[in-house]
Amino acid sequence: MNSEIANPFADGTCFFCGPNNPSGLKLVFHRDGNGGVYAEYTPEAKFCGQGNIFHGGMQMGLLDEAMWWAGYAATGVMEAVTVSASFRFLRPVYIGAPIRVVCAVASNEGQSIRLKGRILNSDGKVCTSVKGEYRMVGREQFESMVAG
Image 1 (cartoon, helix red, strand yellow):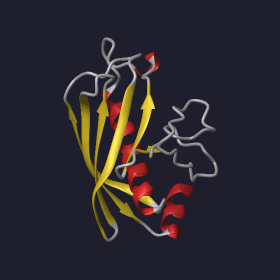
Image 2 (cartoon, rainbow, N blue to C red; image 1 turned 135 degrees about the vertical axis):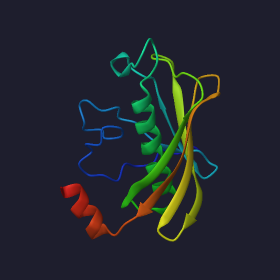
Image 3 (cartoon, rainbow, N blue to C red; image 1 turned 120 degrees about the horizontal axis):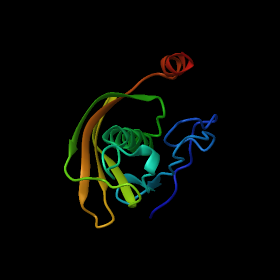
Image 4 (cartoon, rainbow, N blue to C red; image 1 turned 90 degrees about the vertical axis):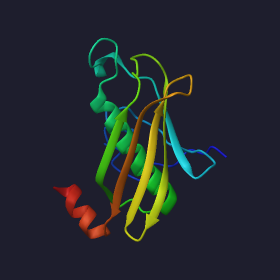
């Protein structure tokens, strides 16, 4: 069952998923029916690196965002932060070509969630991959962090 995951953030200002960020990507994540999540996106020219290639930093941001959504979908805990991430760039992601960002929890041990994600091109080939860790933090600590 591929169902949309409701965005839990009231302000909606996240660059990647916030519906209220005028400069943002407004990604919508869905459950994939196998315990993971996915979002679809077509890279825009304003995020170009060299040539016609989607900037690597933007790819890393998309995968980091997907890790958060996979952790949230699996645990229901929104108060989680990135601890580490390791990225592999396997083939170019091109501007204007639709991609699918997918991610799933690899393990969940206490407050630590390990995740694996990929950016797939329209042929289903893996272009970029990530292995990362998120840490669940208490609501008070999370709110203190995001309040600045």
